[in-house]
Image (cartoon, rainbow, N blue to C red; front, side, top):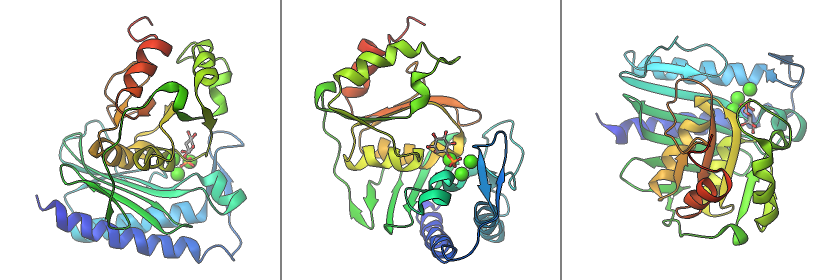
Length: 265
Ligand code: IPD
Ligand code: CA
Ligand code: CA
Ligand code: CA
């Protein structure tokens, strides 16, 4: 498979999609809700997903597509080449703030991430990686990540962890938030993952994400030595929803062992 040529096309399409999103800023959005009143989608999310699907199908009719807004294929396995698309990650920010959102694309072969792209549309920052060939921001190579400690770490997490939930004893998170140098919440999983890749933050934790939220960012952060698992320390399967812990090397192990009580739940 010629991953370079797929990557080159994907980058071109992501840039074009970014331009479409920027030019929507002075138009009225059509906003709808999905599973609950805070689960938002706009006409732009849908248009951008359809834009990618028509580009991909035009060049790679045999590739499969998993998209958040449902214009892609049905999935029971990750056999073959699969594009995972989040047309706008951080839709709530897109609507309310016109910033702090991204386009996220992952290209996987038999469940293994080969290409990851995350585009911060407003800052015109394109992060990308091809497995085994380094990770880049706007074409500049990103350095490998160094180990760090909890007391020097900025950790991104969102407020759902303070609420009781089915996935994890939320009390486990309190010592982590207390011991960390600081916590942040950006409201866009894809950017929070690439912020770990650039060292802007040191770890990101989420209780529940979908494959399209994490597929692009995983390839980028793993390429730099960052570690991506669920909160039990297991590999993500990219078919259904899962929790997420992404962190610098060393820090990932410490959070799992000392705070998330790996293996005890
Ligand atoms: C959401 C964002 C958010 C995360 C949610 C995701 P969307 O994606 O990544 O940060 O907390 O779980 O669903 O819906 O804006 O693409
Ligand atoms: Ca959404
Ligand atoms: Ca998302
Ligand atoms: Ca989305």
